[in-house]
Amino acid sequence: MDIKEKIESLKAYFKEVYLETKRVTFPSRKDALKGTYVILITVVVAALFLGIVDVGLAKIIQVLFRG
Image 1 (tube, rainbow, N blue to C red):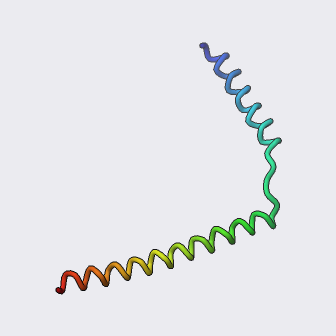
Image 2 (cartoon, rainbow, N blue to C red):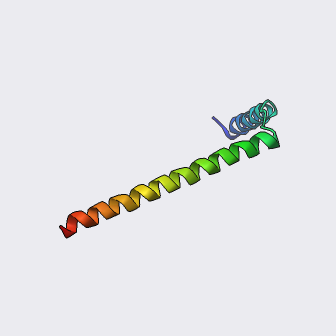
């Protein structure tokens, strides 16, 4: 494959990428914000749960090593 064929192949690739991006449907601002809130709430709940589990396990380990 010579340089001209590579350039043409690259041009065709980017043209296909451009055409594909024209077919993409992006979420509305409202939908994007709703999804963001769901993710943030899920992360906070998971962090709280893991923090509580961590503290509980740390206390259990402290009791086991003292006794």
